[in-house]
Length: 241
Image: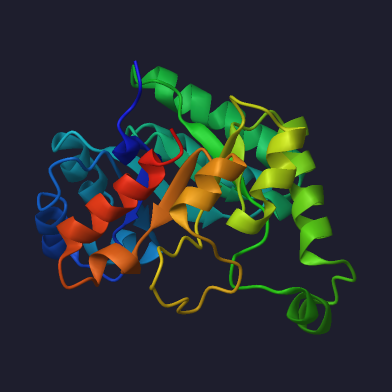
């Protein structure tokens, strides 16, 4: 049975407060997944996750945990107990933090009788480009090389996948077949602005290259007709078949 293209889209509820997020999530009947990021989580509190789940939505908790292993694992344990299905952690936190966080998330879900979430390691944020990576952070390798290194770390730690820009998907998918997830922000449908993203591509191209799911925010949430914008993304994804 072929999945609906909407299952490939994670709608980013960035820049919204609780009321706006809950209201917006009802505007799109076919919506399956939403992203709860730092802005919404801080403005609405953890309960917004439960409220969105009560609407039948799958939750991508994108808080990008990056700390010492004990702190990261405790955060992932608590996040898992709320029923989220995808959790982001920074790959550059290191192998021990990644492994400990995965185990803690599994234990947190088990203690509450919920399925274990998949941890996704953030490789390199889509706002970065090689020149800035080297000049500002002193990381003397290309973005592509850095992404490769972080994805390998995630894979060896047993994580469920990683977050990368759509420009790195094709290369990573060749190295890491499914069920290793490749979730891609930086998706811009034809005619959309890049905003603060540097490494972008279209929904269709990202899916063709092997992306598992696409994180799309402003091209839908700030469109004159968000429902129409969402459906156009679905139509574009469907062209792959």
